[in-house]
Length: 247
Image 1 (tube, rainbow, N blue to C red):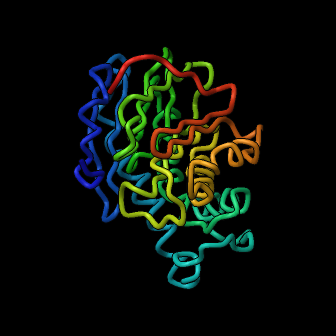
Image 2 (image 1 turned 180 degrees about the horizontal axis):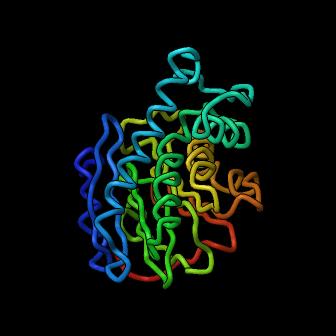
């Protein structure tokens, strides 16, 4: 199985009318509940994706370190909105700003659709998800070769959204990771922050012995975290709700 083929989108369910948007490296799956769906949302999402990407690309032309830095950069009050958000959350997570790019774009698109009248919205960007729902939804965690792959399901409650659910892995996908975790999933009110924190803590998990250390270090006000490495699972956070079943 490969993230590149976006195989997990087949399990997104029939609750939503969905469409995909591709803009260079950005590849989004967007679901909107059938009762509030409108064709206008496709154009709104497309415009928001292009705007966010243009802000990032344009800024990086004069600040190339924005693309390459693995460490936080100084806050720039003159930067475009998307860039400022990425810099801000990356400083909280202690990672480079591009560690938050997928979550930042998913959140920008998701919030724009909610503001335009979509009642329930799911925006998935390479496994990083923005969620706004009216009734609970089940989200599965893919964890590669771990025996727990497809067996860890989370119930997201409507009163805990909008939120972001972002996963980083050292064994799946093409993202840079300095750890060994099969999956580190973070749930946070800020999708970009969830993305950055997932990267941070995935880097810190180099063996099963690191799981408890990561859980103790995770900031309680950031939301919740699930760590999977081999057959070991650890979690903390009041918004982490496990349910039975498999993907």
